[in-house]
Image 1 (cartoon, rainbow, N blue to C red):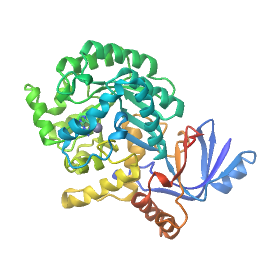
Image 2: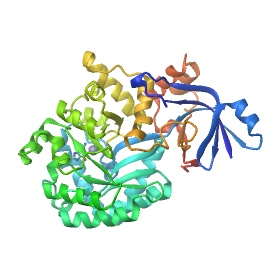
Image 3: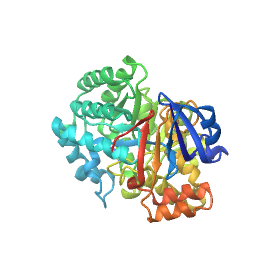
Image 4: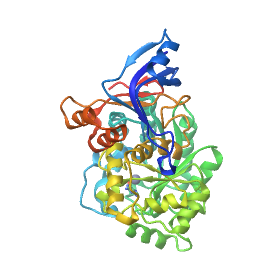
Length: 427
Ligand code: GUN
Ligand code: ZN
């Protein structure tokens, strides 16, 4: 039994519906078998539990572990391809690299780099876009299981409009997906997601094979891309002439429900937002990716007005790294630039989008904030002495201001320690 003595910030109450940042300057968080058993003023908790070991974290700021709701495992080496719109970037940067994961040894080394990328940034939970190659997806799950990160992922499926090595068939995708799902779905912290790359690269038969897998293995998740870029949307509508809209290409196969997370949605129609809300599907907003590819500005206000759950994703490798702090800051910039159409975001909103909202989108009630009953998934921000974030935190005028400094300045180099389910992740 351990008591973490700390300065802690989290957002159990949604700031988009009136909740406020929860801040404790000298908290005691008692953890038993990975679960938060008690939380309160340090002195009170310590008096009640005199035999517990005390870990003093007051040289930093404790936050809930970050939740990344959209990140591509095979794209870590593709980060930094600037200057192209989506479909060119896929052809020139992402897809050639993804072809290399056909080599299982190559995939294993990428999986190790990828898990390090997540944990070094303080990400403890992620919905991961896998690979088109089944052995590479197996390598991802194996490495995630070893490190202990909560990963939901799946075999990426496609049968048209991509380089030939990335194409499969509906029957083969079903068989490979089923083997992976049977091996990994529900194994410790891991879950399986049916993952068509996007409607542009999948026939209706391929989408139907994903639906069949979801029907045969209960509780699977669904993730894909949607409404990212005008040229992509036009190409999808062209390929699915009978569809009401982009979302309908998935919805008509029964793939849109409360376990569905759709990435981007920068250009939705009102009908799509209404359908997402009524189905309980969530959206992964990926601000650095949308900015780098000039995909468009995310209409957060319209998502909120329709009652669609929005969380953050890094979208590595179109996104520019694994840090949810950077994504939060870019989300803030984007809403500022939208002026009257934007949502003025506070630091509390950003923390919520990067933690609790992600946990909600992924149906993981056990994580997302540091309340009693949740798992102890946490990160410690401890900047280098004398660096701007260190100066900022020492001179912050309020908890909200300290958090704004963290979102403005923190990088993975400032994430000193990370815990998942009470276990410290080794560097
Ligand atoms: N749409 C289909 N594939 C991708 C991808 O790898 N990245 C992004 N950003 N969009 C996609
Ligand atoms: Zn993506």
